[in-house]
Amino acid sequence: MTAITDAPFLLAGLADAADAYDVLLCDVWGVIHNGREHFPAAVAALQRFAVERGPVILISNAPRPAKDVLPQLAALGVPSSAWSSFVTSGDATRAVLAPLAPGPAWALGPERDAPLYAGLGLSFSAPDDAAFIACTGPVDDERETPEDYRARLAACARRGLTMICANPDRVVQRGDRLIFCGGALADLYASLGGAVIMAGKPFAPIYDLALAEAATQLGRPADRSRVLCIGDGLPTDVRGAADQRLDCLFIAAGIHRNEVSGADGSLSPALAADRLSQDGLHARYLMGALAW
Image (tube, rainbow, N blue to C red; front, side, top):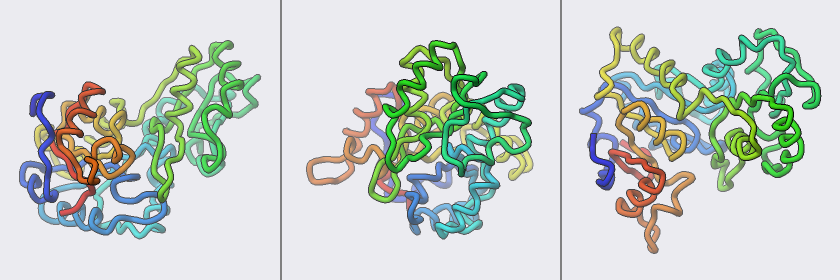
């Protein structure tokens, strides 16, 4: 892999690098949709890779099992031909939650994330009576910020409760807005002295699931030197790829776009390299938005 001091190689399209890889591990939110609409060029690129090269494993920090996220993809116009298998942070987190039953847990998050807990035998309570926190994000992510939870989280930290965070993303882009996710609440909880456990990106459990799915699709273990991760989040997608020693294509038109673009708005590999190095990271490749 390229040395950390090198700038990422700016690709004109995925086709410029596709022949070097057998498997894609591709982020979802920010790469193939923005929560309001899908990106046709990104979908077409994944379809092309799946036909010509090999499996596309979607790897998402969605805090619900993959089967419960598929209707959202369909509603956003993402066809099933764009991917071969799908794993989520919710899938990986269920393995962490199961041994903690019956709890009770303080389920911190919106009602739509209830499928995370289905069949685990967990009970639920208010924060004062909980044995641990199960966090998927703010209850109302359109209006709330982590500060709305400071007092309640501080009280839980004083009691020594562990937070199981099912979505390590700090923010995602919804349309033209950035909204807070579970990772932002986990950051606050950790700053208050609370213990946090996460299984989604950038942590190993979700990559173990994704590589197992790739092996199933290939009919053999994946050669890690021929696996390419695609994502737009530095602390999740890019760090996860680095920790797993997998090559990464950094999609820079997402949540970090203002940090890696020049005064004229054009994407700058030098600025991208500088921003990556601030977090001790490197990406082998760089694109503004995914396309073939």
